[in-house]
Image 1 (tube, each protein chain N blue to C red):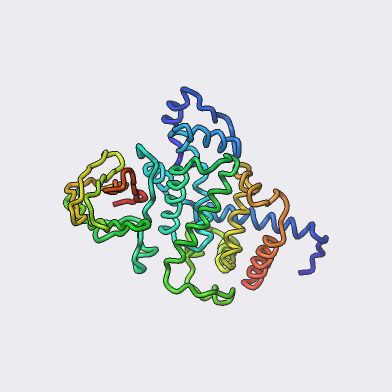
Image 2: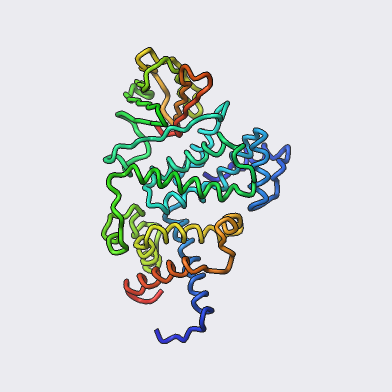
Length: 206
Length: 159
């Protein structure tokens, strides 16, 4: 991943129209340029918004490789039908919706999807990386990750998107999903409460 | 336990703190895989983006096992078209034996990142062979015979 400073410097020569923009304004400027066939603009959008599509796919319980297929399919679908997206401001919402549809389609190909109760979900092998993932250095982080993995899938997706929507560069996501910043709606509130309860059960309060 | 919480307020603070922790943890534990952005960008480098995207049909026993393949058969499908390829390692390259269903003299282009592309045409039975294909991020582009202008592409995969 990581931006290559040399390439950046070279391509910045002709100062693209999205130079210096952030968040929704950046996406809109890139989308307009992409429509005109600007490949740099497409690449920029892919770099900025792949985490969004990734989190939707992973939030649907897809394993890494299926989630990666979904990410590629969503981007190819966007750029092969750019004219279908009439309103550039709708980009983030389009990506989320398309990623959800693709994820459900990918889930549908798995054998016999059994409707899960929350209790059953706990018993099912998780597609999340193991909670003891090396990166998690503190006991508290490991407990939070374990509790998150036990949440119903719907909650996992909502909380992933809530986290992204809380970041400045994903303001557009908050608007699309009607998640005003600094306010936690009832559904998210319930998901967070479930997560806190799980943390309490695991010992100690969060 | 014994904390008194102002209605709404303290809870809200807890929620924000928990979300902040979750965000930090997700970044650490579950970021998009390395190279994914580059694979998408490579897949989008097509001349003409008026394409249909075939999906990789992974057999269940491979689900979650690996994202790259160095031997064996891979199947991609889109609507009525199926693309099957079989890989055989030949030193630093591989041979790709392919089979397209429904059969037809479809155009086949195999793009490999930083190695340009190789092309051939499938025979009447829908079969094609490409020798000495470099390994790396790979995308297959099929020009479907008899449809005027219909192009099917696969996602970029590491072969």
